[in-house]
Each structure stands twice: as structure tokens, then as C-alpha cells.
Length: 179
Image 1: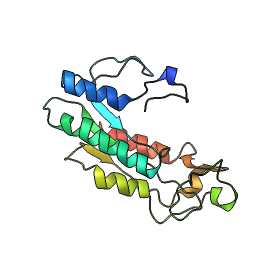
Image 2: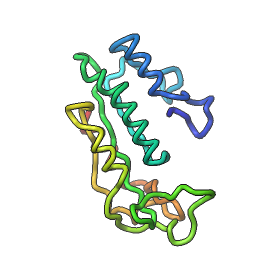
Image 3: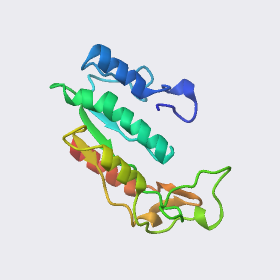
């Protein structure tokens, strides 16, 4: 979405909407936008995207389908374009049937909010790998097996984010290799 720290003045309301407009109207000239963390130093050579774990599975599916149909597929048809890399969403390890946070009123508490060391599968990764295909609608599908890495989370009710150094460093290393 492009928001930084829940403050819409620091980010873009919808990065995908801007990029779709750029592709439709400017072709290859997909840019960084006006609100970036660092000023761009040249043309965009790589586009790295991830839906993330903070949307419902239903919303994630819709956002991902929009990214694929409006951004990735049109860019894949252009010869000189940014390399498109999709990073699969890391596994959540909440003590629920599929490790996902249960979105209800307030915070999840009790035993369900405690991290477990292993989950059977990552439903977000399963969804993303069904929609995103390397060589078809992205150049690289960056995935990793973190089903058994629940003990590396921040803990105390945060079973989505990893302690550092940790699993996120693996993603960064694989991302760097893809460049």
C-alpha cells in the first residue's frame, strides 16, 4: 500500500494504482513515486513485491491478483523492463490450526497468541505460489521453507516478525543473489 507507520502523509495511498497508471500511460517508465525512503539514483532495474501478512487471506488474494494482472503481466511483455521479483510472505507461527492470526475484536490472547515452533503449512505462501509463477508473471519467485522456524520469532504475541539476525536475513541474502 505504501503507507509508512500508519501515517498516510509519509507514503502513497496505493502504490499499485500509481504503477498501473504508469504502465498504461508511460509504458516502460515505471518509477519510484514521489515518496520513497531514499531518493532514486537512476532507472528502476528491479521491482520487488510482497503482499505481506497484515491483510486477510481474501484481501491478500485480491491485492495479489491486481498486482499480477495490472503490473506484472504487462511488464513481462516489455523487452527492456525491471526484473520482477516476488517475495513469498513468511510463515506466521501462532498457536492456531494454520499458524495465522485470528482477526476478531481486539488482540488474540491466551494460548493462541503464543508462538509454536512448527506449523503444517503456510496458507499465504500456498495462495501466493498458486497465483505467482516464475517465468510467467514474475522473473523470480523468492521462497524459503520457514515452517519449522517458529522459535525464531520475536515472541510475546508477535509470531509474524522474526528476531534479527534471523529468517529475514535469509530472505535478504536470497534477494541479493537474485540481483
